Length: 256
Image 1: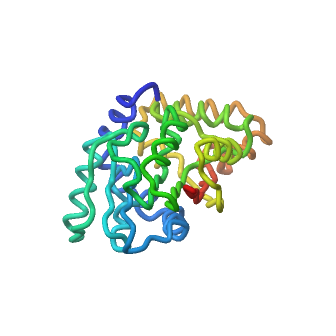
Image 2 (image 1 turned 90 degrees about the horizontal axis):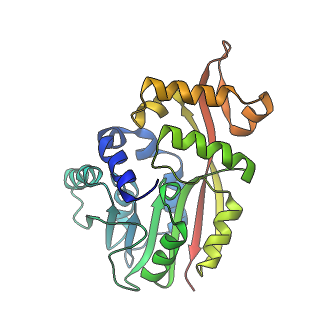
């Protein structure tokens, strides 16, 4: 991602696909995020880069209010429609950037972001902004895809950004921890949640052209067998790429 416009254009163009995606609506990172967040009726919550609002909708029954923020207005249109259909009166959705949150200092007790920070160009700015808008004792709970090693990240970032130009960086857990602690957060707990993503679904989800699909296959096929295993690639008996496996980190950070 080079700027906010890249992410906005990518997700506006594919908003209906994300709204219908079971991986995003009910994927296994969501219940873990809710468990780590431990929402209460005293919480005012913010879900950053909410997309079609999956995490915000999941939080709504448990908090006093949840605000979902995203750059892509077409994604937010789906979020608002779902809130209306579900009768959620304490969820609202606003346009804004993760790196410049349009909220006052210390106005939330809970901030979440799911399946989104790998798109953020300046993760340090997002972490600083989340720290700013949280009250003392508040928590930031994140679910995002990670790379197992720095070397694997080099390959994964090219693979991911070929598929979706708004991808920026698929960091290691260690890199995440360094940035979070530099922002002032206390790293309290984390876990890894496995995902298997079907190749044809994954490429269709982001609107890949046939030419892009071929580039992705060639990028994967150039790896050695051990490199394919390290990257979590899955091939069928005929040697065709069918899926990739990746770990989703869920982490709870606390503001002292």
